[in-house]
Length: 263
Ligand code: FES
Image 1 (tube, rainbow, N blue to C red):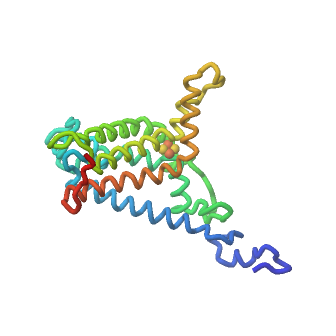
Image 2: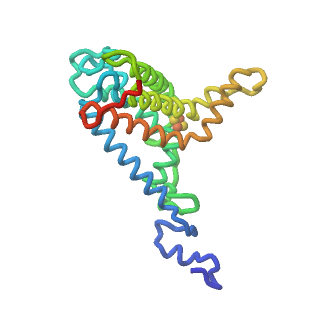
Image 3: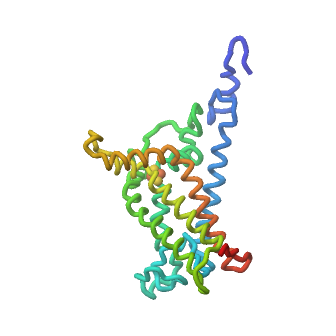
């Protein structure tokens, strides 16, 4: 409470304990808790999906967790470059790449550094750690591999878009189902997430000192920069998009719901 001696209420806010010293009166902890709940929920769901190895394909829909299918034990073998010796879930062959891309994403770093490591928990909230080494030492220095994960993750939205096109071709002929729209939307969202990446922006406009001499790169850079402003929001929406697309394919594959055909 503010008093004559302490007009900003500093003494009271510090009395909350040494861990969260702050003058903030708003619910600064709410985004932190939401981030923890959503990311943990996605990790638990994604792990279950990756290992379950069933109900990820119902012709012509394939879950984004299992595309591209690289092993011959896939229900839907897109590129069966891995032989019979692979007996585990085929999702385990591909998920390290989009997972590494998300884990090292500059936006997600901010989200999980704040929420899980409280470093700091929020703006104007004192962090509990005594020292700060940032990403200059192991293991956080490994975050610098993000630019390489960008190149590894780049084919995924293209492959998922091809899956969306394939989703027009049903066993009984050409058509469009709700699942077709869901797969295409998911591919577009993932494409937006990938293109709005800071590494992509650097790829387009980095090291260009005079934009007038590189008009094409300037145009790409402008386009990516516009998306990049919204990268955080796109990151969340595309994360939900991947999970919901898998849920939809799974529900159709198990017969819990039927896929409405639009034509
Ligand atoms: S994907 Fe988020 S910064 Fe690259």
